[in-house]
Image (cartoon, rainbow, N blue to C red; front, side, top):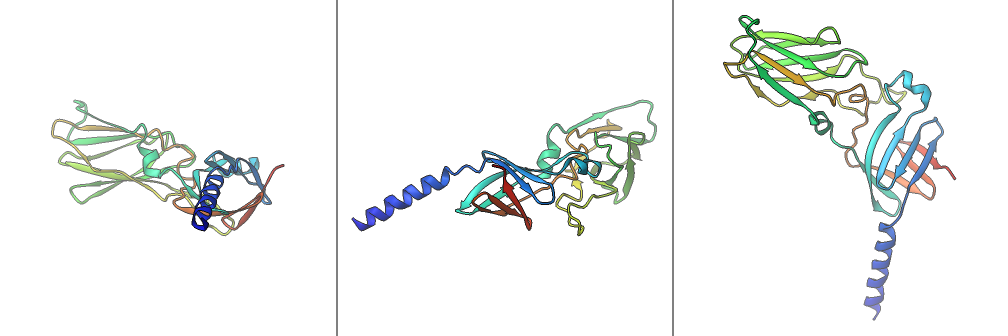
Length: 223
């Protein structure tokens, strides 16, 4: 009988705990806020920070209750976001002589980007990507390429210089067949928010009544 009561209590506690809803808006003393909608967690900076960042929502996560006063946060990985809509097309262009053209289309225009293209000939080619500089040329005998994309300037996420984003996006390897001499690479998901966004994996925040403590800051729920 005693065992059955304990099991019943455990079931009731687990059910109640699993149904806990943290939805609402939690304000921090520094002006930022957390918005929770079901299992979605957003960190939004004050409007005056938009001169520093290109948008006000720096973190988009899912949350999961793992204890009575603890939540686990996870973001969609950066490489998953970057691959959404990514398109690589290969052409033959009769106007290109003795070289291979690699052209990029990326909507990022917050600052310039540094693109490093690595080839099977053990040579690295650098492109300072901007709205006026989107392509580079490789030797005609190049058979494979991969590349990395990084901003030329990072904006810290805290006054003491901490950064919670990704430093660069690394591509997979692409093969260039003999019949092609122009590779077009379109990455629509690397927008102005891509490198300034928090990427969080298995991070925890403490919940106590109407308060969330996250990254050493206290956020209090609006009544």
